[in-house]
View 1 (cartoon, rainbow, N blue to C red):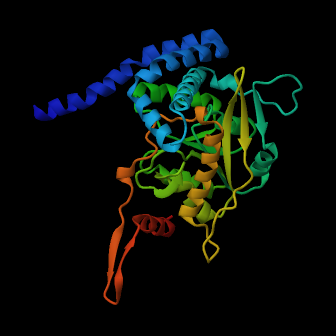
View 2: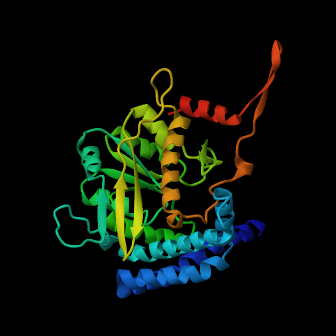
View 3: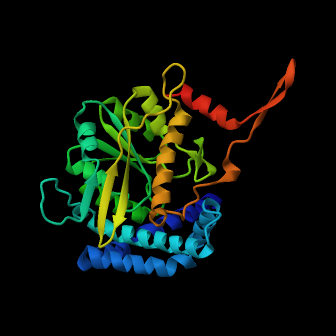
Length: 338
């Protein structure tokens, strides 16, 4: 009986999630009926209204105070509202992902999307070697994968499935209609991601989220943990690493920007340093966030000081006792794997 009670307790949240599927499908249908402009305006207005009432708003404001300690509080509140606006628009745009990206290098009329760095894209696609692409939760962060699929770049996007099973199923359906390869960031998926690069493909990943087993990097002046997967793959295959971001422009338009390949730090043997590489990528993301702070997802817990590795003490009988930050231990472990 106790086991049955435990199973039911665990199952009810999942069953409730699946019960939401008709509701979410109705919202998607409504967004499609309204069209991209009206539905995104509605999504923005909705989250600008209810977002500040949610617990996540407190997280956003705490993050903004820590990242911009000298900024007036009124400016922080404005940025937080812009972040809710962007999230509301991005959510509504899921219903239009298959038609949102309309960039055509040969077109002469107005387009909703423009692309900067198209030469880097062509090189990445045609150089005959694998490549890695990092991005962040800026603007509509789904568009780079759509761009890659439209223009023949053999790319697999790494994504984190939503916790709600209904949302996860529907987001997966939308993504598969408009994107290329997809790889869920689940336990064991690292082998599938490695195979993508091993076979000459391209792997894209959002790198601005907390990763418990990550390496310590500095982001917005504060230490946090970053997933070292791309850096380890770059070291192992010595392949180019590019950054891509999406900037939301006025009147429902977007600009995609692809950076040149990064010159990642290497050790004395000429091998890419994992922690240094992740710091270099994170520095690029920080520059993007500082340029358009209202378009970043401030609501998630990027900084978790209580989960940072502690310093360990090493005793040497012939020398004074010294402290070695545990971050160095993580870095050494990461450089010995993969």
